[in-house]
Image 1 (cartoon, one colour):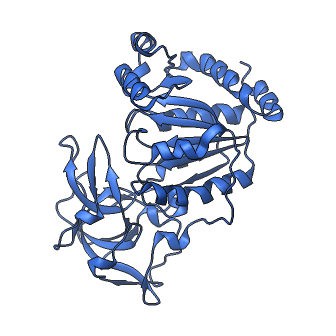
Image 2 (spheres, one colour):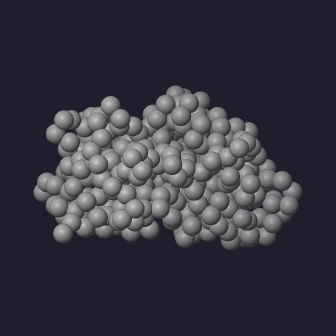
Image 3 (cartoon, helix red, strand yellow):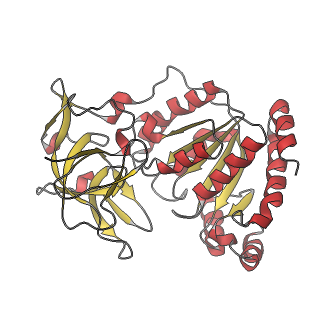
Length: 351
C-alpha cells in the first residue's frame, strides 16, 4: 500500500486522506497553484525527502504518493523549471522539498539527482480541482503602515535567514513584538519556522496567500501579497522582519515587494555572497542598504573589501565577538520607530 505524504505547500489546506479524489485533468485545465499528486519513481538520492506540513523532513521511496502544488522556480544555484515544462509522459520533479511540482529544464551538476514523480492527477472536490487559492488569506481592504526591517540578498544561500533569525532574537530580547515573514521566493516552511523559534511572535509567508512560489506575473503577486500585508498590519506588531528570497534582480518579484512595502522600510540589510556581489546589486538595483552581512563578511579582510568597494559597513553576525556591535547597529536603526517602540527597544539593546 502506498504512503501519502503531504508537502508543506499543503499546510494551509484541510486535507485528509478521504476528503478528496485524485483525478487526471486535461493539460488545458492546469494552472499555477493547483494541488496535484505524484507517485515517487526513479532511483532515490539525498533529495528523496519531502518537507511535511509541520516542517519535518520525511524520506520517500518509489511507490509513495506526494501531494504538492504546480509552480515555477528560477534558482541561481540549484535549478530552473516549472509545471509548464512537464511533458506528455507526466514525469515531474519536486522543485523544492515543500512539494513545488514542475520539471527542471536546467539544474546544477553540484546537487544530487532531484526527486522524480509521475503525475497521478489533481486533487478534486465536488467535481472541481482544489487550488491553493481556495485556502488563501483574504482582505476587504489594503492597509499597511507597519515599520519593516527588510532582508534582501545577492542570491540564494546568501545568509538572509541566518540574519533574520539573529534579528528576531535580538529584537525579542529588546522586548519588541516582532512578526517574521518571507514574502518572495520558492515555497519552504523551514525558514519562517526558524523565525518563530528565535523570537518572532507570529510567522507568515506567500504560501498563506495561495502562492507556491513568487515566480508569477507581477500583477498576480501584488494582488496576492496585499491581503497578507493588510493582515500583518491588523496584528499591530512593533516591527515586521521581512525576508525577500533570492535577489531583487531575479524573477521572484523582489522589486515589486519593495515597492509594496514602500516608506515603511526603516532598515535594509543586504546579505551578500561575496564583496563584489554587493557592488553588483548596489549598482544594478540602485540599492543602498544600511548593513551588509552574509559570506561577504566572513573575515576582517572581506569586511574591509566591502567597505572599499561599496562604502558600506559589514558585520559578520555569526561571529560571537560582533554581538555588541550588531546590537548597537539595531539600536541606531530602531530610532526610526515611533516613540513607544523605540524606547522599549533601548532597554534590551543597550548592551
